[in-house]
Length: 131
Image (cartoon, rainbow, N blue to C red; front, side, top):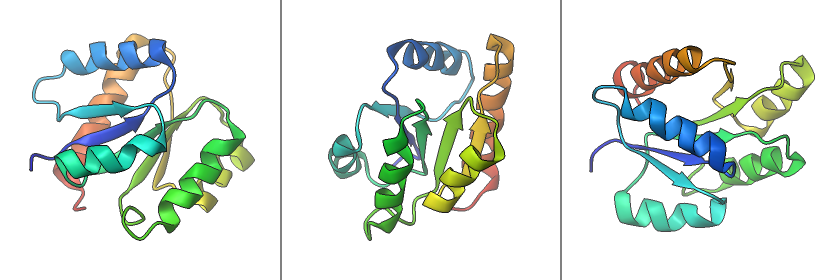
């Protein structure tokens, strides 16, 4: 199975932005969007284990709890999870690390910054890291 990532993305505008940026990146691995963790099992069954799971933080108090449940699941707990968010307070970010996040990435405010972060993300998780 070809390496790919899953992204939990509930914001349609962010999804479209992410898709347009990825379309510009040569050799970008596939990114499969899901709207809830309930879809995760179907995607994994169809495509195999992802390299990494991304969560777009929408300031939901349930997102860190869902992450905690995901990390405690014997089928998925070993898969790295990266959280993308806009909050920069230490306590907010630590909440995700305590829940099991591998990384917390602060979303850039520009299209160019977004592309640069996505390229760096792909380079790290698909070329540098061993998962």
